Image (cartoon, rainbow over the protein chains, first blue to last red):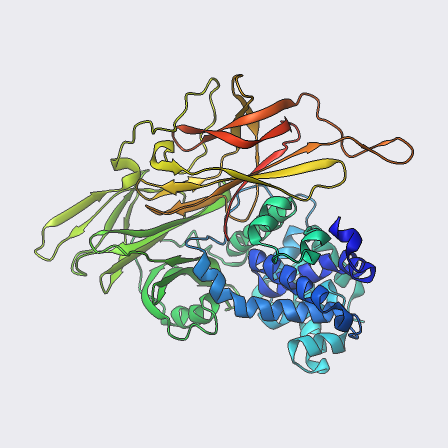
Length: 165
Length: 401
């Protein structure tokens, strides 16, 4: 099988990081199908350049940045390829195991806060790596994360959303 | 550290979302992994999209008092220019600077906005949430080829809901001969909806899955024009590929008839199964030779051997879209993924894999694919050695390249 021929380091990296990377890109982009494509493309690029990427101080951050770049540049092409593609397209009851309320609150965070939550918490990047991917300062990352958690905490505690927004 | 317990909850909330593209697809040198493959081959992609779709829809009900759906009106209300400005950034990509807003169909708190850039049409339903941030409930991109030149529908789309209290939404846009006449729609359940019009275009949306029964307007001379929607106006008899079923197959839903589709030659390819299973994809090319309709993926199909009767088996709906607005003349392949157990033993002689299901249907070579009305029999280009009902071993998806 092809996996047996793949670089074992890359295979391990992929196995350990594919889910966190995907979750992060998913939350940052809010476009599940494009996130799938972007993450697949980013990992493919990482594999093609593994000799270099493997020496990156944070290969997962490299993949996420590549995926986000791919997402932004590919949106237009994707739109042209799909003649009609509703965003909301599946009618199945929600999984009772999911923290649906918390997911909705996270989903509604402002874009930058979502990105920081995605990279800092879901992808487990540190503040500096997150800052590098997003092109903002480490201090800004800290502020956005603090605000995001504050909003989530207030909402979960039952505060009215308008009061803390 | 800022609230580590909450941070752990955030991480746990996303643990159900997985990226199941096998390593083989990443390291394969031939071509980058396609979205089709992703959607069909990874079962986890389905619950992922389900939850996100629900999230988008529920957000409106939970966070927006009164709800967006609740504020909907059958006649357009005064367009909110702030929403139009905010929706431009939310609905369009940064590079779409040339996109023009054609119509804003405001109904209560939410509005459908129709943008055009060349032949690209971007429809987006947007609203302000309780925080004042613009949110998009749904959006779609459509290429007009060709666009309607008379009174008619260019595109009809649907975002299905997930519960009786959240029925999803339907939208359409098209051309009208003059802006002088309001376009009045009558939905299947009798609901009357007045569309918004501008520049020879009309646009409307409504929070239900009801399709259009008829629509009317006035021509330049003030004469009434009425069009009965193709879904209800054209009675299509059995097509050449329509097959009698020995067992009643449940309707697939939507509005398409089996007889309006021309069947191409099915092809197949092998997928990546886990150790102990074989995966085969069969692609069924379909071309809509009839009027525009809504094509829903079926929840069950018929399967049979070379000569035996068809048996109905459930199928999982894979991919992000289970319903598609199929334009007249449009091709839309459907992919069926089949998997079955292949006995593999480890070095100790123990079987690896789930094992066969209790009562498999063996050596399947024919499939009966249901539509909203009628069904089509398809001879498979390969043999599915086992098909299981519980758990379902078949899944269906639209192919998008």
